[in-house]
Image (cartoon, rainbow, N blue to C red; front, side):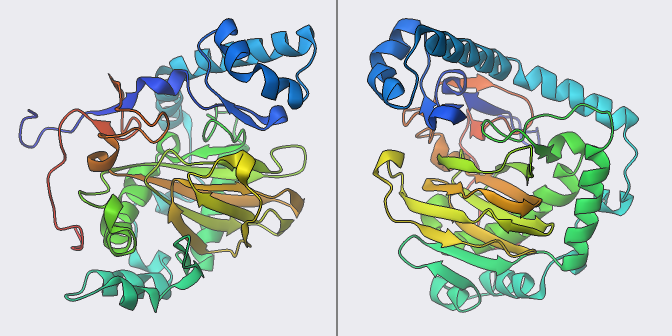
Length: 350
């Protein structure tokens, strides 16, 4: 039992180092526990995707072993990067590192949140204040940030990108972008966004994921550009719920596409296509199969916030679909806890 007032310790599931290893050229997420298991479980499908020669397989094996090692060292290396950034980085827009202000948020978003936190609010009333992209898939869109804020945040991100400081990969699939906790924007920007604004909104839209608070997150910015990442294969998020906000810049292509809830990628035939609009956020369940179409021209930057509820994931890890095997971690880890979160009124602003 944690001492009252003590910081909560978050964990990750042990499956992080063996499940859902993404191999872009074969378009597959793989479980990896060794060479023989890989051949046994994936031999036929790998050959069907072009991994046919011994050299192909050895290259794949080396990549998977390297990715496992990267994941095993991720916590320590991320902490080292963050410490160096805190010591050496000089922001271009220091005002971004102060507490989130209502003036940075779109009026439509503020109105939707205000309604969500009001007495008697219900999902039907909230949906009148959002754009419904798919009633069946429960995917919605709403302006989140002002154009001025998106521009300021992009300026800061590009300033950091151009520095010689180390950058971590945003997630296990994207190679280009920024981890907001390493840059120092988690506490002033993302945590109040989650606690004050997204919590009451998501509680009405997706009550089954809000039995307790959305008590942690993983937030990052992804960048798509010529010569870098241009598209993203279909996948699920390691999150109960997701917010994806387009920040800019000028671009063509790159639409999001959605399949079914926990649908097998191989069974994906019909999709919902959603174009990005700067400042607008797309709200969806983390288990909704989705990906990104190839970028046409320009650069696309998006802020993605994976929202996590320990009351939900403590019972079933969304990545391995088993009871989580918990390992202590730093920061928010992957959102698991060893103790149950407190029961709160999730419709009340904090």
